[in-house]
Image 1 (cartoon, rainbow, N blue to C red):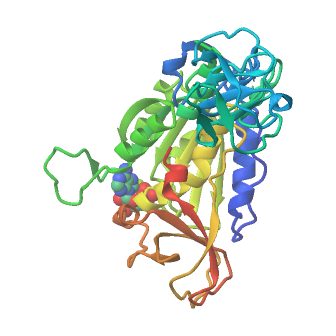
Image 2 (tube, rainbow, N blue to C red):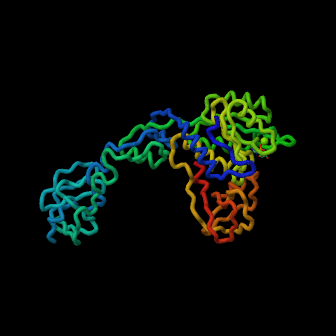
Length: 408
Ligand code: AMP
Ligand code: MG
């Protein structure tokens, strides 16, 4: 069984969009079906499980968009009108007496019989308290009609919407106190490498601190995942098998490291023994090697270990996969074209995601683009996409993906 399809031909690289399409296909075949009902205040960052259909007209009745006077246009002859009632927001007015106007405030219901609101700046209150209107008025003026935002039965938010403050506000305006959301996706994070130790411990010879673990754990939490921190895995087959075997109850095992060509790839060996394995060589830089497979039925994504490679492949491949597992439709980050603020004289055979930022409307890039340099990404505020087989001179267009698009 190899649902991912054949890996690319030996020596050829798989395009980023092909890898993404395959991952999304896999994700769709195993979307999270379980759901939970949560109070509205707790749904931030979660995925809506059912279509949200309006049970209200919004607004429920025509209301005033201004502080001013409600009247019937046809009653205006140029003569001042008597004020027959005063309507504040929150009140339920009676019908407008013909030939009069009503003092009205923003958000207050427009009384039956009135068909326009004139703002107070265009009205003069006379000594006898009648009101003279200075300009001609049009029916409907300054009235927010009933149902202007939504009407009963209308689809307001489709299932699969990521819920944030704005969606919470909209659901509240429709009177929803609770929403059905998709259960959190459970992701186990594994860092592979004999050289890794955790921050807080003294650094021995040949050792480096594990940076991918906290990077991915924090990021996954932002994405609304339940994170299982599975620690550091030594470069050892028996240990790899044993650790993978412990991670039965997760939706994804996300590992970093150990996928470089030429390295003893214990993750790969364990997957091919007890599941299936696909190794991809991607046309992406940083981050060429990527593993996708299953261990005893649990999906596994193995990202390359260099921190900038981890960042780029997580942002562009694992993140969309995880969102799609939860039923999100729009999983790809927004990108836009900006002029390059640099030359790119040597075309590469991989698509480059340079850590860059915008300065004076142009994309500039960090001086060191090594895949081991995470600092490039703290300096940056986006990924500058340079397509394969492409050279650039300053001023040519490049795609820019804001990091803010992928970090949440
Ligand atoms: P690998 O993919 O295991 O060959 O790792 C590639 C490079 O990334 C090596 O220099 C590793 O030391 C480094 N690396 C791997 N995992 C991590 C990690 N969790 N944190 C920091 N660097 C790592
Ligand atoms: Mg390694």
